[in-house]
Length: 164
Image 1 (cartoon, one colour):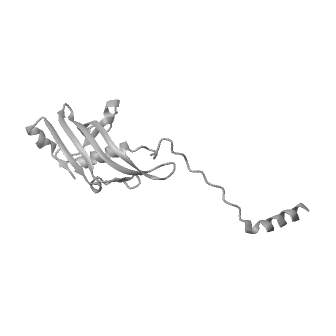
Image 2 (cartoon, rainbow, N blue to C red):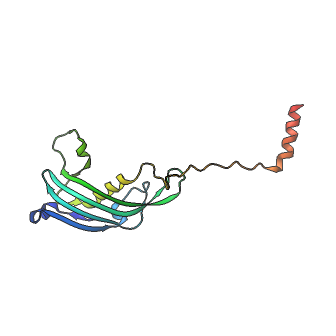
Image 3 (cartoon, one colour):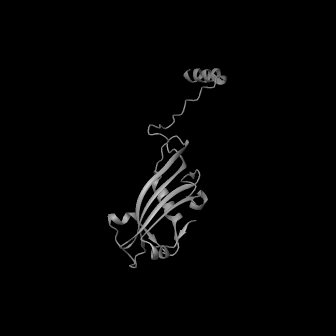
């Protein structure tokens, strides 16, 4: 898994850029979410900001999902661009979040920033709650079972007996 030492990188430069191909097993997505089809391509730019780092992230790949209506497997392209702030965990035991704090990824360790954790989170956030194979996908209807003609004579006999 790509691990970046942000402290060392930003001692010598104000901006970092990188391109990575991350294997599906390195991202360790929960199997119930879907299965990545091939490596995920990640282009990243990191700049030092006032309270941490600003990350511009581009993710490309594909994932196999199951349609929540017809249960058919289908491939969804992952193609997202995000801007995220990286910050150290707050020192206060409790904080209140503002709207701009929702795009914050908290760092545990600036010297060992695991890029795969951030990519995994962004992929999970990009998967719809109820994935659909097509916008117009319909719930399959059950066909009425054909009547078994072997017992139709017996059924008629029982019905006539009850009507007497």
